[in-house]
Image (cartoon, rainbow, N blue to C red; front, side, top):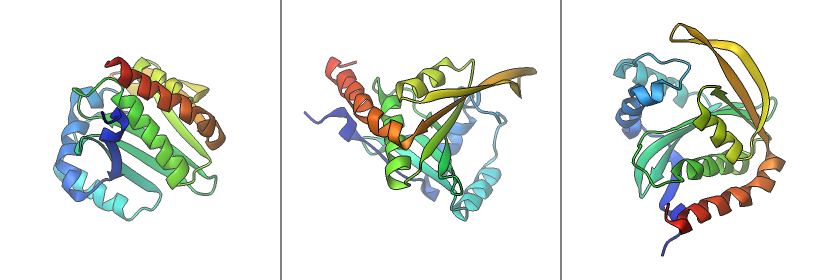
Length: 188
C-alpha cells in the first residue's frame, strides 16, 4: 500500500490553473479568512497572475492530491533578510483527513529546502482557530498579536503572528511526518 503522503505533490502554478484558483479564491469559505474578501474578476485575476510572473520574490504553488489540484501555497520572499511570508488554502473540502497537514509539510519543505529561506512567517485571524492550530501543529511559534489590526465585516479583528526558523523546521519535520503517517495508519 502506498503511503498517503506519496499521493500528494506541489508544483508551480501555471496559466492553466487560473480558472480553478479563481473559483476557489472567490468561494465564501476561502474569502472569509482573507484580508481582502471581495469577489475578484477574471480580468483582475489574469492581470495579477501576469504581474507575479515577473516578480521573483513571489512563488505560487499548486498542491495536488492524486494529480488533481486541490489547494494553493504561496510565498512572498524578503531576500535581504532571508525570510518569507506564506499563505495557503485547500480549495477542495472533500479530501482525506490530514491533507492540510501534508500541504503544510510540503510547503515548509519547499521554502526551507528548495528556496533556502532562513525564516517562514505566517499570520492568522485570531477567530480562525483552524489556521492557528495548523501553524502550531507544524511547529510554528506565536511571535505576536496585532490587536484590532484588520477591518472585516465592520469589525476590527486581531491577527496572530507566527514564525518558524529553518533550524526549528529541521527539528519539527520528522514529528510532522510521523503525524501524517499516524493519521494515514488510523485510516482517518
